[in-house]
Amino acid sequence: MASNACQVPRLSLLPFLVPRLSVHNVSKRGIKSISAVRPNHFNQGKNLPVLGSSLAAALERKRFTTPLRTGALGTKKGMTAMYEPGTGRRFPCTVVQMDRVQVVAHKTRQRNGYFAVQVGSGWKHPNNVTRPLLGHYAENKVSPKRHLVEFKVQDESGLLRVGETIDASWFQEGQYVDARANSRGMGFTGVMKKHGFHGQPASHGVSLTHRSMGSAGQSQGGGSRVYPGKKMAGRMGGEQVTTQNVKVVKVDSEKGLVVLYGSIAGPDGCLVKLSDAIKKPWPNIPTNILQAQAAGDPVKSLG
Image (cartoon, rainbow, N blue to C red; front, side):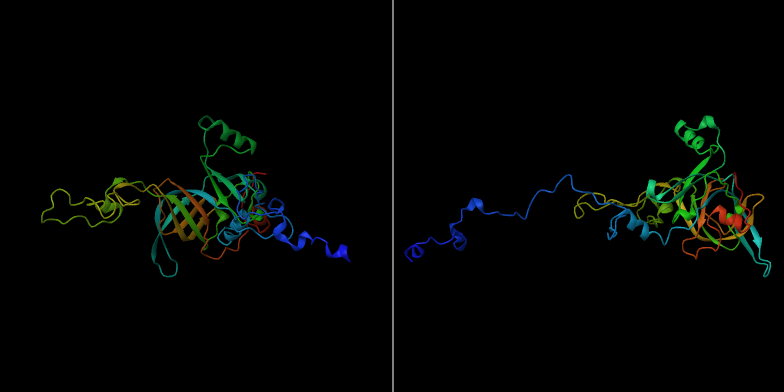
């Protein structure tokens, strides 16, 4: 009994007697590791959510506006007019000619992160082609092309075989396409032509500055500077312009002509990129060469 009365209390019951050095304090702040584990952008594992900032999520967001099949290249030959057979109404149209449009290469999701078809048109002398690009053509067994453009597709079903030739019959009469071309360059222009400024008054104190821009900014209130993006005189034109929902009026596969309704951007002889319209329902036509041949579509093949 005496021994029990003189027993020293346990340290667990007296926490203030525990030395401070033995207390394990976990800090809430720290330095971010420079060798942190990078997330897998493809998320191919099981029960893993798709990252919002990953490539897979970006492709899924763009899936609705990505064409099912590749586009084609053409040259703007000029404009003409046609007549409606029923009403006799005269309407303008643009003639685009396709010259030796051929599939040069294609890109896949596993290797490049997205699906795309590389299309070339025309012909270029090998002496005028750089060595790396010439080796690219030689590897794919395709002649050097004057123009080389890439068209994105939704999935692997829209990839064409390398070496396939795309004819004008790739498009059907009545469908809608998006035409992209570089607009006509107009050189250095003033603010009245480039931005639609009204100019200075024609009289009442204005001398020799009727078409000038005027003041570019305030003195003290705005920091004595010119704001970024200020509309000023400069070069006009020479930029890619997309004309959407252009109707295909007529297709001549023998001459490689595609006649479009109305006008499109660019001067005569410029390169035109034609693809299925993204704001219209996808046309009910084959997405690749094999389906086109099975359906009887006269799409030529080099194989």
